[in-house]
Amino acid sequence: MAEIEVKHVSKVFDVNGKPFKALDDISIEIESGDIYGIIGMSGAGKSTLVRCLNFLEVPTEGEVIVGGRNMASLSSFEMRKQRQDMAMIFQHFNLLMQKNVIDNICFPLNIQGANKKEARAKAVELLEIVGLQEKANAYPAQLSGGQKQRVAIARALASNPRILLCDEATSALDPQTTASILDLLKDINRRFGITMVIITHQMAVIREICHHVAILNHGVLVENGSVEDIFNHPKSPAAKELILGDISENQWNGGIRQQELVQEDKKLRIVFSANSSFEPVIANMILKFGVPVNILKADTKNVDGIAKGEMILGLPKGEELQKQIEEYMVEKGLEIEEVSADV
Amino acid sequence: MFDPTVTQMILNGIGETVYMTLVSTFFGYLLGLPMGIELAVSDKDGIRPNALEYKILDVIDNILRSVPFLILLVLIIPLTRFIIGKSYGSTATIVPLTISAAPFIARMVESSLKEVDPGVVEAAKSMGASNWTIISKVLVTEARTSLINGMTIALGTILGYSAMAGSVGGGGLGSIAIQYGYYRYQFGIMIVTVILLVAMQQVFQTVGMKFSNHLDRRKN
Image 1 (cartoon, each protein chain N blue to C red):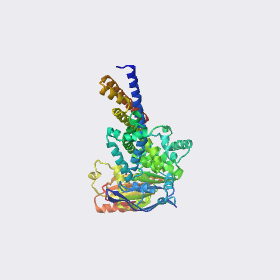
Image 2: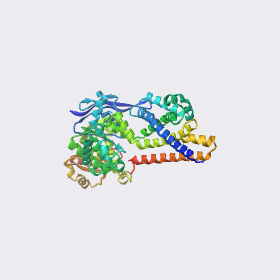
Image 3: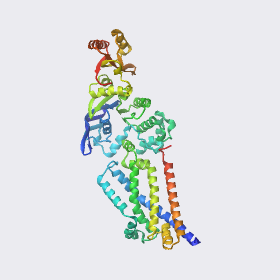
Image 4: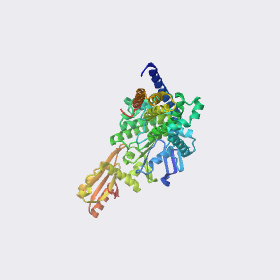
C-alpha cells in the first residue's frame, strides 16, 4: 500500500482578490520506503504540494491520504499526532536560534511531553548519526549551513517519523555540502526505511538520491515515474528543460559560447546505457568519420555499480554527415535525441 | 538646605518612584503581554488569524494610547478611587500608570513577536506543536531579547510618567521636584531630584540592555 496518496489535489490561493491556482489536479502515489523527488522551476507549486502533504496548507480540492488516513478527516489533536509522524526539513533550516543544538533536537520530544532525560539521550544518539557530537552545546549561530541542516535532520528524526519531507533542503548549501547532506539522507533512508519526499529545483539532487520523481510545471503534474526513465527519456518540454537546465546551471555559466568556436548546427543528447559506456564510441566515431565533434557536455557516473551518463554533442555541418553519425550511434546502442535548447 | 528631613524626604521619594515604576510595569505587563500576544496571534499572518478580534483589540489599543496621560490620570479618578480607596499618593498613581502603559506594552510585545522568523513557527507546526506551545516555546522564547529591550523602554517611559503624575498628587521624586522646586523656588532640591531621575533612567536602561544581550544566543 502506498504510504502517501495524493488524489486530485488542487490548491487555489487568493492573490490580491484574484484566485491563483498553485496546484491543479495533482495525483501521485508514494510507496513506503521510497525516496520520491518533486522537481520544478520556482513557482511550479512544489513547496505548496509538500505542505499539502502534512496539511500546513489545506488543499482546496482533492484528498491526501497518509498511512491510510485521510488528512482532512483528522481532528486537530489527531493532526498534531500525525504530523509527529511526518517530519520536515527546510531550505533555511528553521532552527530555534535561542536554543543550543541539543535543545533544538529535543524540541519535538518536548512538544510530545517526553521525559527530559530520555529526550536528551535520544538527542545525543541522533547527534552521533548526523556526525555532530562535538557541537552539542553550540548555538545555531555558531554553525555552518551544512551543520545547521544536520541539526535540522537530527531534530526531524527525534520523533521517529515514518516520513521525512525535505523542502529545498540543499538549496542554500554549496555543492560539496549538498553532496554530504544527500549522502546522509540516503543513509538514513537505508537504515531506518523512512519514506522521503524531496522537493528541489536541481535535477542533480534528483539523480543523486531519488528513486521516483514527479515534475511540476505551473501547478500541473507534467510527468512522473522512475528517475531513470524520466532522465533517459524525458517526454515533456518541462522535463527536458530541467534536465538541460541542470547542465547550463552547473557547467555552462557564461564565458565564450562554444557555438562561436565550432560551426556545429545540430546538437544531440546521447544517453549511455550499461554496455555502451565501456566502449570508446565517440572516439571511434571521430576516427571513423574523420570530423571533429564538439562535446558540449559530458557527465557520466556510477549508479549502483553500473556506469550511466549523458553527453551532448555538437555535430559539424552537413546533413548527410549528420545522418551517418546518428545512424552510427544508434547502431552502437546509444539512445540519441536532438536537442534544440540553447545549451 | 539639605538637612536630615530633606534628605529623608528625597530618599522616600526615590523609594516611591521605584515602587510606582516597578509595580506599574508589572501590572502593565500583566495586561499588556496577553494583549500583545493576542494581537500577534490574531493578525492575518499570525498563527490563528481572526480579523474581527484583531480589529477590536487594535482600536481599543489605539484609543487608550491616544489619550494624553495627564487627561487619563484625571479621567479615571473614579476608577482609581474604587480600586485603591483614594485618588492621591503613589499607590493611587499605579492605576493610571498601568492603564496608560498596558496598550503601549501590548504594541511592543506585538512587534517583538512578529519579528520571530515565520519559518521557525512553520517548523514547530510541522512537528505537531499546538498554538499554545508555539506561543510559549517558540514566539516568546525566540523573541526574548526583543521583549526585554521592550521592557527596558517601558520601564523608562513609566518612570517618566510617574514623575509627571507627581505634579497632580502622585508621590515620588516628581512630586518633590514640583512642590519644592516649582512652587517654593528651591531649585537645589529640584535639580537633585532631576539628577536622581536621570540616574535611575540610566540604570534601568543599562541593566536592561546588558541583560537582554546576555541572553541573546544569535551572536557570538
